Picture 1 (cartoon, helix red, strand yellow):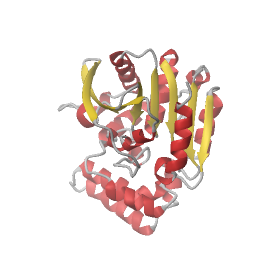
Picture 2 (tube, rainbow, N blue to C red):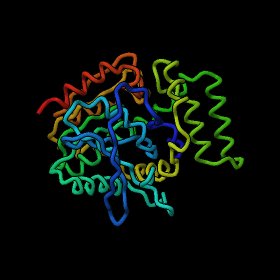
Picture 3 (cartoon, one colour):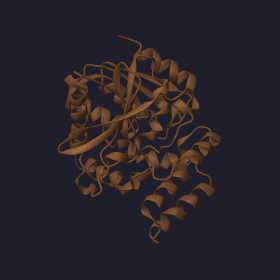
Length: 305
């Protein structure tokens, strides 16, 4: 399953409008491990979850600009990423249960009865896993281009990306994949391979190339991706838990997202209190390709009390 390092979320500084709020660094402890998060604004905490797994949370900071006033943005640096990556780290020990319980530890640290989670790609899967495990501890969910309740979507996700790539994209990806086998730093090679195939995640190629140019080195920790997908392959199935969830959930899906409309529809069918909203001419990052519509839809959902 290590191949999925190229699939769930490719992150960077996003081209979102708005002025970033001042951020504050904080820590909490989960199962004896110190984890970090950044926060901005005041009000009800909204925890933003990045994708990958293994991408740093930085690219979700501009996503926070799309949340309406009255929310404190909590940018979690997930276990094994950013400042939540210890000097000695064993990705083989990562499990879905472990990262779900990291969210529960964060809830207790924030002194919240329930968590509002905003997850993109793998971040959506993590949000759903938390909701399936702790349904009474969920306020609302916003799922953006989320992976599915099972790993069925992996059957077509890579193929949908491949069909959009030009020869030069595939050539660059193949070069960096081979480079990793020839002694080039593995993190560097993985990041460049992701950068090469970004056009497969977008409707608009020009926007994909601009996005790729903005990606910062070090944004990806491929060993986290490999470790967690290894665990997901053994046990990941959220369907029973999601059928019992009785909370409001917004599912945001770009029609041109390679993750596929079926994935969003499967989530929607399982969660009785969910709303599914499609964005046309948008891929895996709808807030980039359709920012005004994204702001309107998310604002309307989070504006409800």
